Length: 306
Length: 306
Image (cartoon, rainbow over all chains, first blue to last red; front, side):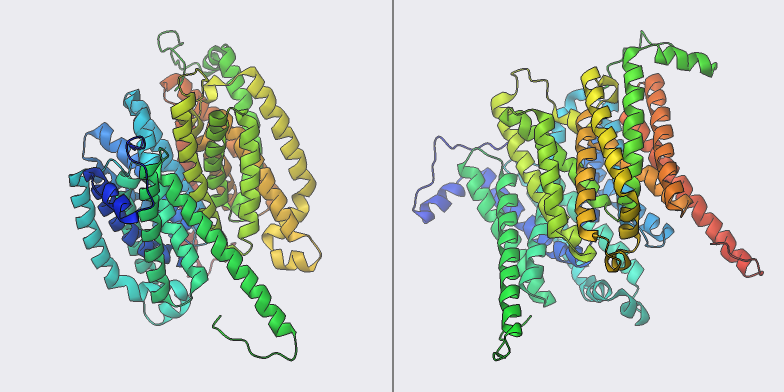
């Protein structure tokens, strides 16, 4: 639950002073540091997730964290280890089932893994005592305002490693995502890349889940990338837009969440969704206008790229 | 959590008939079996279309949406079932409306889902701040994981009524819906209202998911929706046989799961989900093995019946 001191500090119109107030507290500094790191990698990974139509896989991997966290508590291992193991196992499961079904039904494979992990998570809670009931909410909705220094270090290191690994496969992965058949014909290992991407996604989610929760990591993965897809078709620009948007949403959401007693996750998702709806409707209107121009015979000046 | 007291329960003997009699001696077990049977039939039938139409993500999202709807209703003091039904139907229509093409659909669902989860976080914090402790008896964990052993007679009546209507509505549109799901382009060319059918099916799905989520929890709903249908889809290609098979498998899995849960004292939703998952893995695995053997035989001139 957010620990906002709304009664002692209220926002003024002096933005510099506001930001100073905001960054005065150590927990807010940590929240901004961790939020920035998570937003950058989530925006980047999310672009590929949207490109590959794997939102369901992303959502499931986020929920798998639930089984990982509760299992870790039950077996007495560090929760980050439990999250990693659960995430990688789920990625392997999705990939194996996908292959077994000949890629026909990827959503069923994802759904099956999702069900199993949720059931296991609940079983772990039932096996342990009921003291984790509150923990369930922390895993689901996260607690961005309660991040410790240790968390920040873990996130920073894993983000660096993951970004490094990701940059290595970004080019072939892009090729394989845009046109799997041509890529396979050119000798790109499409299946292996897909699997590596799933594992990386699982690891990113595992790192982020314990900080920002299932809800928020998914929102940062999917919505900025979805918006970026509507803004531009150029891959590098789109990835940059996705990262930028997720940064802006996170920063504004943290600030607003700090000055109000409501959860940060709500504000981040609402800003993101509002922008998405705006961009989509703007796009819709633009397309209509362009169609009208095309329909009128005298006017042939249609500026701008598609 | 199951409300059974281990000391009072009859032990499991090898006399199966006596075991079943002993189990059904309890009123709450009778109700659990009745409700489980009704829900399994509906979930199996609707689920087959979910698998056929690649809408597993939508189905899963709707049970998360149901969570938000229920928490929202509890926080704002509205009847949870009413708020749940309204929320899921509205979101289902939004998902259906935003994502018309298959390619962009999962992104649209994911974006809507992320925002609805954010709303859920808000409602949960409102609920915890204002309503909690007032003895409403509402529990978020229960909505997520449910308790089929704790169904009241009123709930049973509601389930029976809504499920009956849903099955009737589904029966009315089964043929055109099958056509539209299997080959949307040809169906559209033949004058079948593909889009309207899709939206209508989304509404049916939303109603099924929400009524069931309130009673047995999101986990069990999704397990019953997806896995029996996925098994049926693997086993037979004939649609009506698959529909019957999906409902049958769902019922069997539910009965076995409740029985195992009763005698082992593990949560029945976990037993049912894991049983369904294991059956699915077994079927996919044996299918795969069979295919491997067949492709081996084909080299020796045996005709491939697939």
